[in-house]
Image (cartoon, rainbow, N blue to C red; front, side):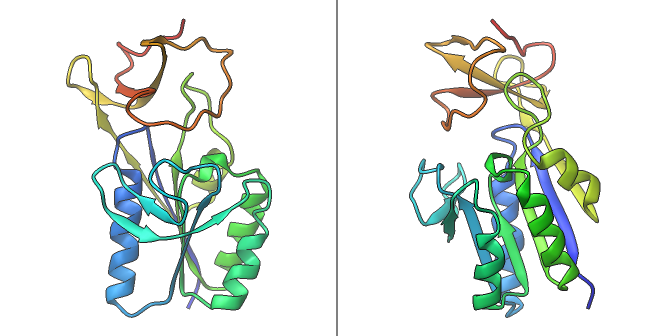
Length: 188
């Protein structure tokens, strides 16, 4: 059976992890072997689990963001049929080659991550993964200002919009980020 790459993307609070977990649960119900990994810098809800903002969770293996090749070793050892990667935007560009190898080995790979950073710039390996994907699901959130569909992530520092030159990686949740439509997204 040929491999497959599915990418679930969008802004924060759009339901990316929730959708990733839903797809992995369906694979588990179908008695497929599943391996789920996440970046080791994301400790928001626990070290060894992917947890959606609505509380859904599955066990996950944390990986150093600069050691994507460890995913190949894990897959070799565990022999899954389906591999999930959460918060893929935090991984180095090496993730692209790793995902490509897994797909060529016949695995179904589901990658979830932000497509753009807080300033609206393409984020990490996500643009290339989206280009390579068999299927891309781009999810939207709800703008906290007006209630319209949100496609951008607003970073807040002390309640104010972050400047464009702020560090790109700052792991956080509702205390630091909001979903915004294009009209209400701001940079300091």
